[in-house]
Length: 128
Image (cartoon, rainbow, N blue to C red; front, side):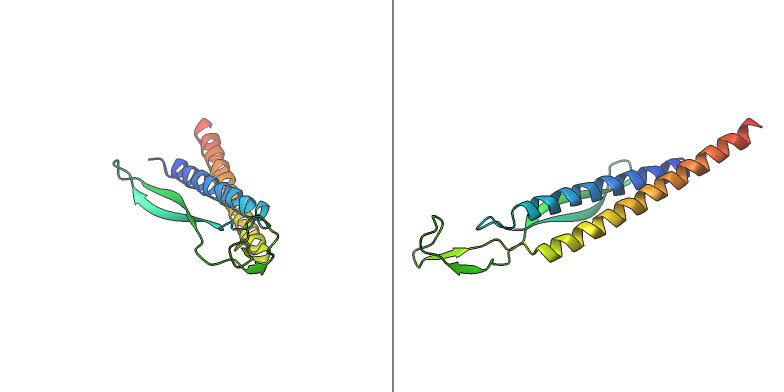
């Protein structure tokens, strides 16, 4: 495979992964006040396709950490003892994850643009 095309494809894969990661983080943030909500984690595995090319496979897992329990017997989701289990999402952690995903996306975008620029330069040299 053309090395410049491979660099572009790798950058595109990275941008897709970081985009999905930002989506999962946004979903977690939107459910921070939902009782019983379990934080979603995006797990990434490297693999090999049948043609020998590497790829990234991602899957969602739920964070098994327990959410804070709050005494509120009048809440419709209260257990028999009157406690409501809140979500296990930390706003600070999610914002840090969002910032990291955003910066990784930008780095992949810069890598893609650099490979595109190199490709253009190569084509200009070949035209002469």
